[in-house]
Image (cartoon, rainbow, N blue to C red; front, side, top):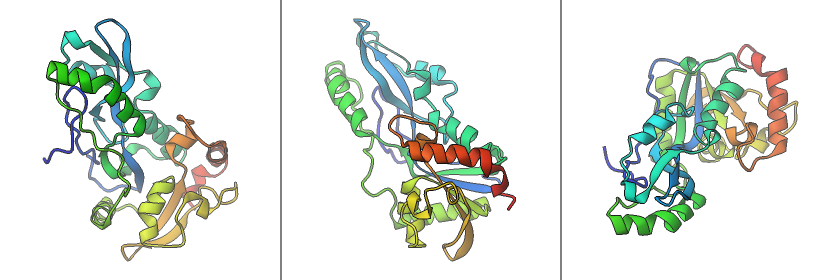
Length: 262
C-alpha cells in the first residue's frame, strides 16, 4: 500500500474503510477518519501533549476500545518519555455517537450499516499541527525518531475520482438509504449529483423538516437521502451548535424509529 504519511513516533497513516462488505440497509457517509490519541508524558513527568494522534483508528468510526493496548505497541524510547491513552472521551467519540444517537434510534446495528468517509484516512487539523511543531519536531531530530507527516485536512474533501469510488461503494453495499453526516458530505458529494442542496440547512432547520427522507439521483440511480447533523453536533463534541443538538434530540424522541418504516 502506498504510504499516506507517518504519525509521531512512527506509525503509518493508513486508509480506514468498511471491512464487512456484505449487503447493508443504509450507507453512512462522514468526513474523514479519526485517530488513536495519546497523552505524551516527558521524561520529566510533565505532559508534552494531551491528545496527540499516534495511530490510525483500527476500524472505521472506531468506538475507542483497546486504546491502551494499541498505544502500548508503539515503540517510544524511555529518554523521550511515555505514551498513555488520552482522556477517554477523546478516543472514539464519533463512533459512539454514530451508534447511540443515529443507528440505534433508527433501529439498526452496525451489521446493517456500510460506513464510509469522504477522506478515508486521518488528517491533521491545525491544533494537531501546532502540537507536533511545538513538542515533537525538535525531539524527533535530536533522537532520530521518524518525522511526522500526517496529511493536513485537504481544501478539497472529494474530487471526481473519490466521488466515483464512493459511488462504487454505495452500489456494492446494496443500500437504499444514504445517511449524510453534516454539511461536508452534502457539499462535497451529494451536491455534485443534485444541486438543490449544498448544506444541511438547505434541507430545513426546524422540527418539521430535520431528519426526514428525501429522494435524489446519485450516479443515475434513485436513492433515499437522510441528512443528519455531524456527530460533533449531536454529541456536543467540542465546539458545536445547540440548534442541531436540540433538533437531533427531538428527532430521536419523535421520529427516528419511524424513518425507515415510512
